[in-house]
Image 1 (cartoon, one colour):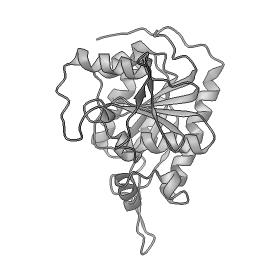
Image 2 (cartoon, one colour; image 1 turned 90 degrees about the vertical axis):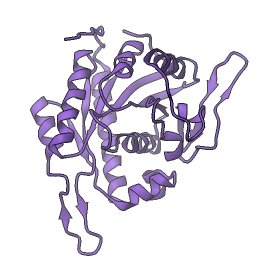
Image 3 (cartoon, helix red, strand yellow; image 1 turned 30 degrees about the vertical axis):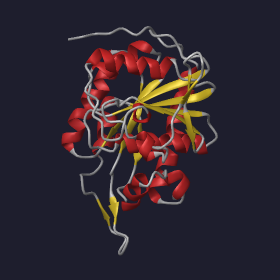
Length: 271
């Protein structure tokens, strides 16, 4: 098991088996919702190849500051401390790095950033089940993982792989979030399940993990995210914001229910 981060009570990974399911948007809005609920929150953008959190939080032009000891003070917005490779590279510059360089950068963003004091550090993981996921499980003791998926079968096939990957490295699964769960027509109020219905809920039941909630598909989410405005701040009474508030409460309750149980050693099993 990796060494804890001093002054950080819980670290959770927000992950998906594949891209395109809105994982980063969910991670950002979850972090802000937890902050609005009164918790001290950090957000680590571990998607090194495609860092998007600075833009989503509306701080793309800000820069973290390093002291003489090379410890980095993260950028703060909406009560959330944020660190991302997006602060350190030009907007249109691709990250043409091999695995060891990426892992080194991830360790620096974990260990050389002044995160404390935090109740919870939310880690926006890259999609898939590769080096970064394995290294994160080895580097720090994760309190749990949250899996994000859409309801459709193709997305859930990869979400299952992500869930099983965390289980292999003894990281508790806090639950599954169903993003783009349904669409409500603003004119007539009809509810339409564009990507299928209850796929994530049924998968959660099958795997014996909590279903944390469904987040509706709303044009407002896209518009506000592009503008760098979290839902909990810009549209707190929207259906999506209320759903995310419920998800944040569920995540915190899951963490509290596990606090009394001492974490076991991380055992990496490669098959």
